[in-house]
Image 1 (tube, rainbow, N blue to C red):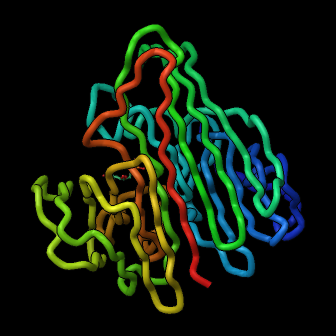
Image 2 (cartoon, rainbow, N blue to C red):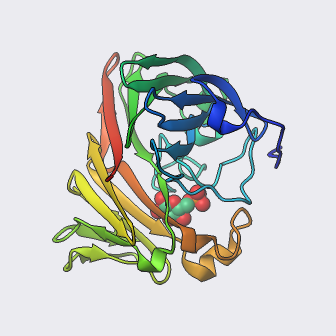
Length: 295
Ligand SMILES: O=P(O)(O)OC[C@H]1O[C@@H](O)[C@H](O)[C@@H](O)[C@@H]1O
């Protein structure tokens, strides 16, 4: 059962690169020589914290989230695989990768970077709902003002498969009503609130209420602006971008969010949804999302 837990952990300010605990859960901490930090839960291969050198936390993590076996952590960067939302035959919203225990392959400091590689492979439980032999490899790297997250999907079986994937990044914001996301002008999107296809006519996306959009073939660089902050959101390999905020009404129905939680977050998700990832036996696909805080 998912649990809410806390423990007497080593203060984050002193944690070196290597295995650690985060809210009582096995995790890996990254610390670059320049002082940039990130923390990744083994559960879900889930980045839960990113603190660039000399800056504050950049990701939203709900204070009401559950942790542990079976939980989908609310905030950070959930890994979505092999299905986006309920767009497919799986009964599990956003697939199963975010609900499973990954393994830590390595955690190292190299040059100015600290990085970790986490891995998830198929087992009896995944094959029971998705009958394919796969491996996921998530590489998370921090350096100065930059976070790189690369997700690789490998077909380890003897038959082709198709899947979707996304890095469902919850960016922390001071007040989402004062945040602006730039760079999506002239793109076509599915408005998942009204189920209509629309065109983005102005360059700025703002949030005042529930917003749930899949931008198809989105540009590979976006900019989040809010007072005192500029954050570049870049991607490679992922063709689509999902922008999501539950707004006040939907947020009030989410048991793992405080009522005003929607004000402090904006999801900007690097995603491959419209054109499925198609992998032959032995093939690999990779997509990356990079966040860069302007100094
Ligand atoms: O509550 P979940 O399963 O984490 O999903 C959160 C949101 O994730 C977004 O990616 C979807 O576009 C939304 O429709 C969904 O509500």
